[in-house]
Length: 130
Picture (cartoon, rainbow, N blue to C red):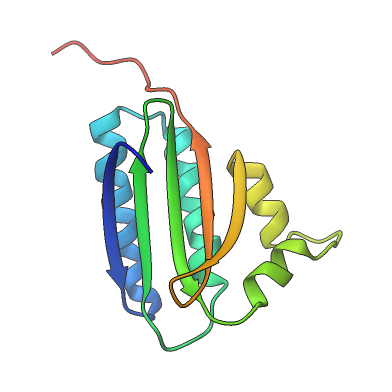
């Protein structure tokens, strides 16, 4: 990872997902992202954070690159995340949602479990004159 990195560690309770949204929203303002790009990133993070069951905190690291935001989320215990992403299905599952809203999804094993990395290519929106 290169660029500016913002790292959050959040408790397992769903209420703390709002903190991730708040940080992502601030990042979007700072980068002047389009509403569509922000909405895609929020949906992707909601799906990933909501896919876990457990009592352990998760770390979310957002890496700001010149043309993309790379977000790593983990650790997820066991193989459930990878199985969910590799599963073929006709429904609207995790794999299909992520394929729709981000440009790349990868799962790797490190630091105590599985981590998912989401890459969303972004272009800043037009700046308003002040």
